[in-house]
Length: 349
Image: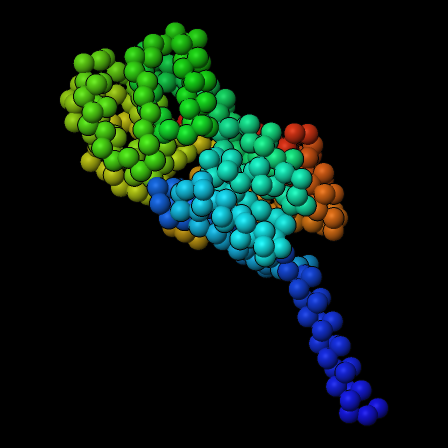
């Protein structure tokens, strides 16, 4: 064999090996608010996702997983730009973190050869915006009923204020909460919204000051919940009131902001596995929440789907209508692509 043939064969072998290595790498595109108002909550999600990727890559099945993170900057319009950048890279497996960001991205996936997991989304309408979406998170109805039952039946609160971040999903959830709370015999004495990143609640608290308030349903993320609680507690008669919120209240920033606050704070969450929480705490030094739990599950669901077929459309069909045994318990994805997770309410430590 002459030198030219040897060189050709070597290049062919290298090209073949390169193709095999590329074929054995699965890239997942993640659109998440890594900066801006949603960053504090998103950090829990990213930690859980990275932990799952590490565990998957420690297995010996020959497939490696990598993540392309895109920062949507807590802006739905930027989430659209993130998706388009990932799509140009040929990525087929997507995750959109956060209800309003997922809602912005979902229509772009309709009719496409992709799979989109959405999390932190109380609005089930997202499944109508895409024919390729899987929703993995407690619904707004579950959060509403869980919170209403806890406030009325456990805390024995009758006069309730509702303070909700101004997003479609949270507004729908708060409407369901009002119906559930009133059905249990409570009275909604105040109902208002605030904008993403808002830190000044003085006018809102002033309007609330003449009222008798036993508990507040508080939804939102970032620095706003802490700012509201601290300003709400400046009214002495409110210091005996309870604050009840969703998983987004469980962040290091919020916990730190409540250190010297007299309010009793509770949050509803999906605690799916004490073993997972132990692993998470050992890795990141803090307790997990449903954001990190859901994030950990998704790469393993992708793995099962990818193992079922090389065709994206078949992978999507594989995920729907099945029950999966995961590290954080059984996950059932119904025929519509919705995975409903249970919630319980805990007092903030």
